[in-house]
Length: 227
Length: 200
Image (cartoon, rainbow over all chains, first blue to last red; front, side, top):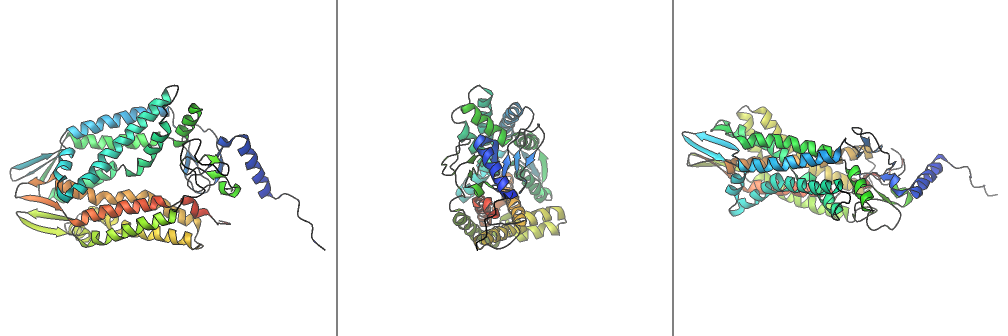
């Protein structure tokens, strides 16, 4: 005697069918968490709220009020602050009548010889280059989205901007500055110049800018406007 | 909780858009689609071993030399931390001890554990593995503090014959080690952490 197959659908089967129906109706109504692959129903939520993955707590959707204008304003501000920061002296050191005033560019230039060049490249890239490229990329994408049709390269440029995020290290550099100051505190008198204060403000603006970008919102906008 | 892979669907690793079987590029963000990132483990191990390779000279060679009145003296990472502690700057000593010594070694150990647990199917809690993964992703860049300190001191402090700083070979080895381990952590496909997990 063979046992009959169990025909009553389990709750697993029901969930499976529900997901399949949802996906067939609208593939964009479903999100798979980029970090752990768990399926979620994409829902528009109010600005300021955060939708996290129910399995791994990855931030899926975090819309901000007026996200395009805010991101554009903050990215432009950070770019202007960077230019200002580079053109003013950063710190002044004084000891026994000898005084030395250096800007960030001067510091990078002072390192750029022999194998020290590698250090100069690391600083130039992670502290100046990457944050500025990222700001420029965001300006390009967000500016485009504010127009009727986004530029063709919006997808590639936004992907690049997101990939650059872990390599922008302005806030790490600021902590490094603090440590360096403690190191020279006993050896020379340190004066804070304009660029130092501008740098502090810039770190703040960059943090606000990063917080004003909701990846899901931007990707949805890019997809909808390119169709 | 169901996952895209339970249906044979492909979730974009970049934006999360779901695609049916056989999709090649994401319709939303244009990334190449993969069920799981190709060669994730090989890339992870390649970067990790390179990172470990650089971490050894980074700790053995001087990170920074100070030249006070023509007298040059080099310090490795640990000697630099001891100098801070001896002069009573315990906060700075603590920050550098964490960022330059504890985190680099801990990070390497965590990435290796994650990789081995995935490759050998160890029954570690996926939740714990995920927390470790998030931690490693978040903390990686902060190890660069010491590299920036060396660059700042060398570039800023040029007071004639009185006082100057020179970077040591350890500094660039350390920077390369941090970069390699960051790339190693990025190579890990976090979706692998949750594969083959039946109940949490």
